[in-house]
Length: 375
Ligand SMILES: [Zn+2]
Ligand SMILES: [Zn+2]
Image 1 (cartoon, protein in one colour):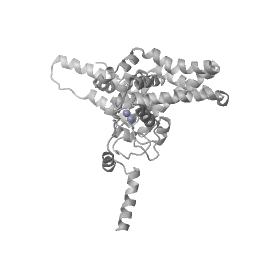
Image 2 (spheres, protein in one colour; image 1 turned 90 degrees about the horizontal axis):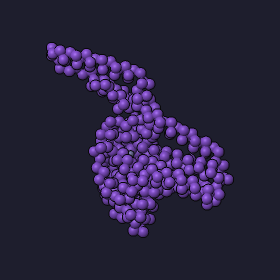
Image 3 (tube, protein in one colour; image 1 turned 30 degrees about the horizontal axis):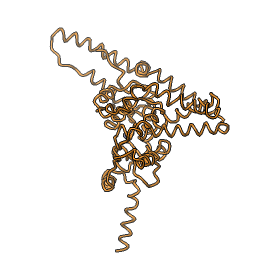
Image 4 (cartoon, protein in one colour; image 1 turned 90 degrees about the vertical axis):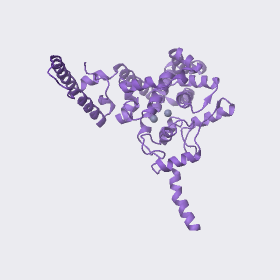
């Protein structure tokens, strides 16, 4: 059997280090393991064939560029790099002060985009952390399509696999493969076979049962094109006579920044921050990621209680615009059955599994001292 080099994290772009070496070693040890021998001629031929395969296989690992060429999706690399370059050019030539209304419009679209991702495809469809009526689900679907990402079905499947197999080969943006891989590199490489295998086993029946999602899947490309590009570009042109160049560039910049905001939850919020709820997992609490992702940076909490519609504790200066919006829609009756754990459960988890950085841990010694004083 020909060696398969497409299934390992072997791309230098991914910023991988020790894990990749370990995987290579594992693969090599697998392929060089000596089979049981006897004098049968057929087995001798098998051994010769085997030696040839091992030699070919090892030669490929010695030539990094061969592996790189086989693993990388070059079309995606080109699209992502050129699109970022275009956004940078747009940003430099934007003349922000002369196009205030267009910039404000781009910010408004960015907020809708973020709500579609955080309140829609993430907290509603992936985690079922609350319920929404048909009107709100339709709004969320359109907002999500304005983010210009994968379809709802693909997004939910990838994110459910991410939660179930975090920081393993089956995690689509496994942060152990480095910052670049978990941020954007994973979109430039072929999926690891474990991601494909585990993805197929994820129960998606609830997603397929939702008529709003089914409609979105059926008309995915036209809806995404309309919501992400056509309408956002046409509004400034027809409503306040903006020129085509600035209207288009404002949306390209908005799209690229929105994509990076979403990606930062997979990279930054799995690396740089504290772990008040579970010190054994990689996801962290990140104030900065929460600012630019409308409240998705409280990721240590989210991986501990993924079914909480708030994706964070409330208070303590935690920015969480998505939760405010869901609560607003709940007042209208459009969002309901919002799930959250009891305070006592959260406290117990902080005490047993946290790293001691939760604000309640700082209060405890003070309270104990105060009590001693009173006694
Ligand atoms: Zn995560
Ligand atoms: Zn999640």
